[in-house]
Image (tube, rainbow, N blue to C red; front, side):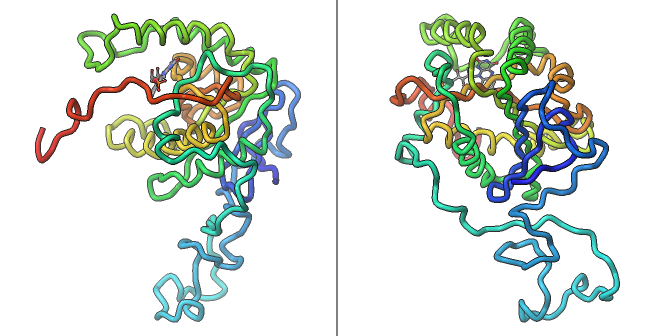
Length: 317
Ligand SMILES: Cc1cc2nc3c(=O)[nH]c(=O)nc-3n(C[C@H](O)[C@H](O)[C@H](O)COP(=O)(O)O)c2cc1C
């Protein structure tokens, strides 16, 4: 592990050499380890701890010399040797060490169909070891992202006082109706159904206990500026570059006996959350918030969903 300077100013930014995901632990937003120089810009993440000038390894992005590739030099390989080249992050495809700790041993389909929004069956008393989280993060980092830029950041909040403050913002967000949903909305959920009543009850339970959940995770995305989100294409590229990793984290968590629940209500107060956690609001966009805790029991079933015939189209709409 090594600490990176830079955001978030109140947290300890930790780049796990194997997982390649910048993971920010917020041991204490009020007393946690400070970066050595908060004014520093974060350098591009050095994935797997290597620099482009180091051994090329098996990655696809490290500059290779013609000697090692056996192909004719390309233009960028023929730079004068005294020309300094900007350092680029390198990536490894070397498999990480064997999975530790072992998971539940679920099949891929079981994981995919039984990763529920867990609100009432979160074990509020059992601590979640960082080793388990780091394993889930390592899995998450294999998700796709636009140009493989891996612009995600995972901010974990474990300090009790900070969790309480986060939960307070989240609860206030829950009371705010989402913007822009006036008028008729399309839904395959019947809001008069028992299923919806069940969700409402479990949501109330989560609202009551969120601050007690051992770990809260806010996945984030780095952007050049928030203007990037002003077009559908910009949004697709942005959200599509973090949500798969976030969902992979949740799937991996399920395999390790952990429960999660995707929520977005705190985003009504995103700026306030950014200030609380020291996130640079202009260039780091929050995506969601999930509680992370061991589940009470590990048996979960597939949830109610529309039949594929209701949403699958062949050849045309
Ligand atoms: C984009 C998105 C936003 C969501 N927002 C919230 C939320 O603010 N609060 C909450 O309790 N659940 C939220 N959920 C969880 C959904 O209610 C849940 O995924 C859905 O009911 C299916 O649950 P199941 O997988 O347990 O069947 C959200 C899920 C998604 C994908």
